[in-house]
Image 1: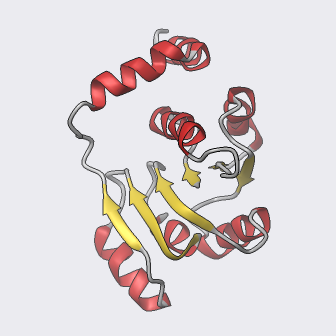
Image 2: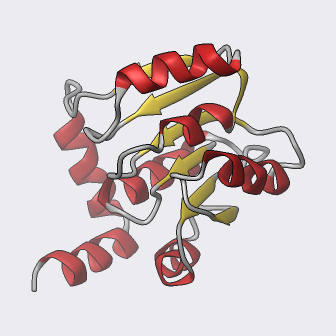
Length: 159
């Protein structure tokens, strides 16, 4: 599993859940643009690897993920990055038959659909809308059980 924008609020939550769900043989990769952004991921213990690449450069991003996965790419890609023009990075890094979940309102769904078609990538694309029944309770429980998330979010968002 690959989480793009993994050091933000939703990205870290996705990494925490992914860590629980992938099992002992699964891998969780988080992507960030720079070394400073990698620190929360390294400290969290939620990821097996960090991809340091700019998701607006789809080809370079693909190369970085392909290297990190020995060319296998990701079964599931979750795009939490809040920047435009990251659609193709998510699509290219999913394996054929994989799933891409776009959880950012910066996503151009036209770009995603036409881009996947243009490069001949057969992936299932899901659009997140920010609401799923029971999501608030699930998220609060996740933060309650994770001292790391609770402390990090308190430090980041209560100043």
